[in-house]
Amino acid sequence: MSDPAPEQHPVEDLLGYRFTDPALLEEALTHASHKNEVGGDVVDYERLEFLGDAVFELAVSELLFRRLPRAREGRLTQLRARLVNARTLATIARHLGLGDHIRVGRGEEKSGGRSRRSILADVLESIAGAIYLDGGYLAVSVVVARLVEPRLAETLLQDSVKDPKSSLQEWAQHVHQITPAYTLVEVTGPQHDARFVAEVQIGDAIRATGSGASKKDAEQHAATAALREIGARWAGSETA
Image (cartoon, rainbow, N blue to C red; front, side, top):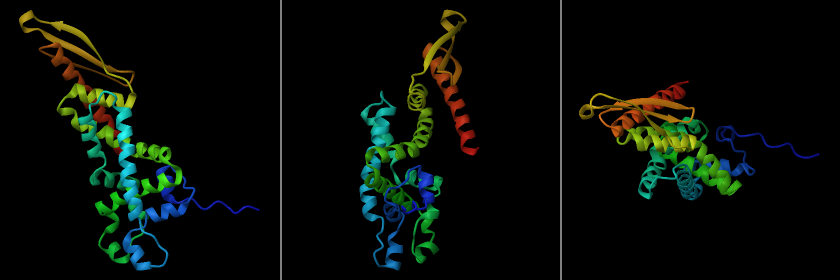
């Protein structure tokens, strides 16, 4: 009679990944303060964090490369820096509720270590390292993409004020893998004071119009209207 399968760790449910070697996950969740307090054979996450830092960055680099096929190297580098910094990593970890599962020492517990940004970010990277060792690069890239994609969409929306058309195109390519289609709907008024109305459509998902003193202005305003609609939907989904 075979041994029963080990009970699934709650973090595995949060990640959508089942470890072949559960000890790797335990190590990824163990802060040095817990190791110092307990002693013995307990291993903390510092080595896994070292590995996970590189693995997480590679997975995010690949995600950006594939999702934004028209973005230049400088733009990709900028986005990657914003997606792998401690603030973003800690936000993802908080959203998952990882803090409840980190093993910390009593002193660290009292000082609020479970919610500390640096610890949350380190643990997320450690988990990436653990998944890489357990299931390989493909496994970790799938998990990282699932965790990071909502933050990427949010980042693209935040950047929309600077260049609405470019931001809308990046968002459409990321979320729907298509390019926005612009149509000049109407031109009114005399030639010297014409008013242009343009419509932008992203598949069957988004349609918006905008007007301006030129075709270019009308398209920019249509893109702004589309981004505003996307932002409203995003806010609704985040609070649902």
